Image (cartoon, rainbow, N blue to C red):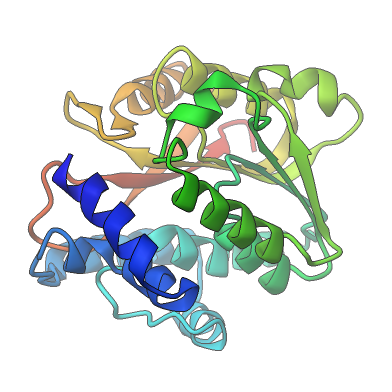
Length: 271
């Protein structure tokens, strides 16, 4: 509650640019977390990248060109992952034509995708503004936050290769009945039943060489703060049934996490 009041107060007395800076670094500013790089977590992530034949030097260059520091332990490694996924397709002599993102939020990551995959079409879906769920999450019930959110999203979704669709992801199959996606990024509702529905629907929108990725995965039993282990249980079940092969990287390589969150990268086992 104190955190929400603090955000509202700061938003009302500061400029848009300063508030954006505060929002970007809220872990450090509001929670005063001391971010200590965990070398074993970093090593784990880099070993997974090597298994996937992702060139770390290419990843560092791509991130640097986007103003992201590879060694910033507060950065989410889904940026690192998508900066390198193209190497997986190059290894198979394939091009990335269509990318689906489930969960647009402010469109910051969407914009990143549009730049590093400038020759690809980015399709991003999020709930319509009149959806009750849309209105009540991420502080959107606050007028200042909501205005800031819409301004940021509008700016980030300007690139011509971004296709923004206001849609409940339950209806994905009906919306995209004639498109197969090379990469699918699942970052919508992280709780069941929706997250399992998003995973299963995404598999039907993919082809044999597609890569499926899921954000905010908890391996241990956990369900709060927009994260849970329910996506992990679904992915592991699909792997146990020899449908998917999953790789899990730490979302952030910071020591003081409780619990640690992961980002998955999954492939069909028949490839």
